[in-house]
Length: 237
Image (cartoon, rainbow, N blue to C red; front, side, top):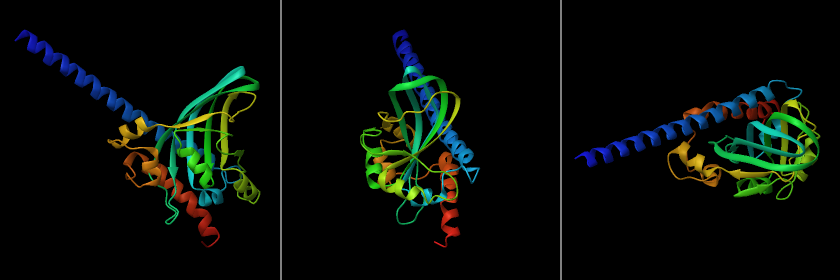
């Protein structure tokens, strides 16, 4: 009897620990989505310095990495966790979030450390295919260019044709530059499965309509839909 009680107690403790870990993981993912929404809102608040709404209307997907950790002395390193959303080509509406990480090292003139908010606007099929790969290397698997800002995005036309991905960043702290070439983006399918409560990949989420928009990501999706339709209404689309 004592042995049975010990076994039951042990299993009870393991269940409680597993439940606590799952709740923590789910809360962390909700927080990641909320931070992504804040980053997008703060970047878009100034019409003359924001991501052009035309780019959001014409792009295929967006990846948002809040609080990317970036630092080094000659040798540099960066790491961050973020979310990716794709836009339906037919309806123009944004879909549910998938989770992603970015990391890498660099060599060059750099010193110090900073927290950086990073956004990728994916403009074409090559950029989208790269982003959905198990591991996607910036600058090797697709071209990445610094995106133009402001209402007048005419200068972005050539960039969209040449670069699969446009990048936007906002830094806090002292650093000599943000080097992205060689950085690796990895789809976080473990987080995808935790968030949606079933085994699901980023490709399933972004390309196959395998899940629905969850309540904790609805605010982010609604914001993207609003920014996207602004430009369409202005030009009578």
